[in-house]
Image 1 (spheres, one colour):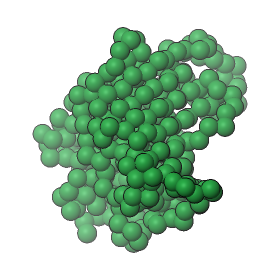
Image 2 (cartoon, one colour):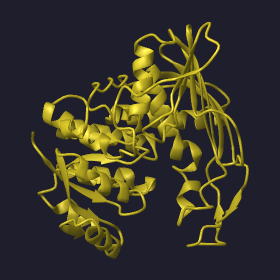
Image 3 (cartoon, one colour):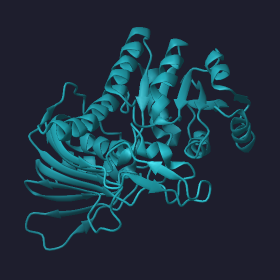
Image 4 (cartoon, one colour):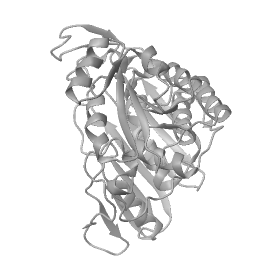
Length: 365
C-alpha cells in the first residue's frame, strides 16, 4: 500500500471531522492544513498535531503533498481544485463539485489530461446504512424499483451557522447544499438519471441571521430556497424530491423507494447509519433491518480513503468526479427546468457506484 500525504485547504467547521477521522485510515495521512486566514490554519494544526500550517499558495507549492482535500466554500471549489491539479495533486472536494457546469467540466478535463483523480463528497452513501439498502435492492427484497420520494425540508441555516451568507448565494440554497446527499444516494441505489423537471421559488427575499456570531445581519437571498423536482432514471424509475429552506415542520421521510415487491425506507443520507425498514408485498408490519456493512458512525473521510485505495489499485473511485458532475448537472437541471418551463435532458451520465464489500473496515484501508 502506498500511503499518500494529504493537505486540507479550508479550516472551517467541516474540517474538524475530517481531521478527527483521518487517524482511522492507514492509506493517507494529513501532513498540512491551509486557510485563507493563516491563524485559523495554525489553530487547526495545533489542535490536531499537524506538522504544517500554510497559506493556500504554500500548500499548493509543497511538492510532498500528493492529494488535496478541498473544504473551501462552493464559490472557490473549482478554482482551488484546478490550481491543485495544475500542481500535479489529486483532489477530493466537499460538495458540490463546482458552482457552474462549465467549471465542473473543466475540472474533469484537467484531471483526465494530467492522469489525476478527482473525487467529491458526499461519501455518506458508502456508510453502512445506504450500503445495506443497496444490498437489499440488489438481493431483490423489494423487486424492481418503480419510484422514490426524497425530502429535505428545514427552516434554513441562518439560525445556527456562524457565517451563513453563502447558503443564499449562487451555488447555495437547499438543493446545492443538501441535494448532493439525496441525489448521490438515489443514484447509488437506482442508477443514473436521464431527465428532470422542477418548480422553484425564493419565498423570503431577505433573511435575518440569529446565530451568535453575526446576529441581526441581513442576507439578500439570490438563489431558490424551495425546489420541488422530479427525476426520470435511465432504468425507467421516477422519483420526486423536495429540498427546502422554507419549511418549519414536517413528518415526511428522508427517502423511500417503492418496488414491485415492497417498500424500502432509506435512512437520512446525511448520515452513515440507520434505521432501515422494509415492508414486502403482503406483510402487515414493517421490519427493521440490521446493517450488513460497517461505517455506521460519522465516517466522513471514508470517501478520501476509498479514493486513495482506487489510486493505488488503478481503478475508478466510487466517489469520483463523473458521479459528482452528474449530480451537479441534475441540480442545475432543476433550476433550468423551472426557469424555462420544460423538462431538462441530462447530457452527462455516470456508472452506478459498486457496492462496498461486506466486512470492510478501517484496517482494509
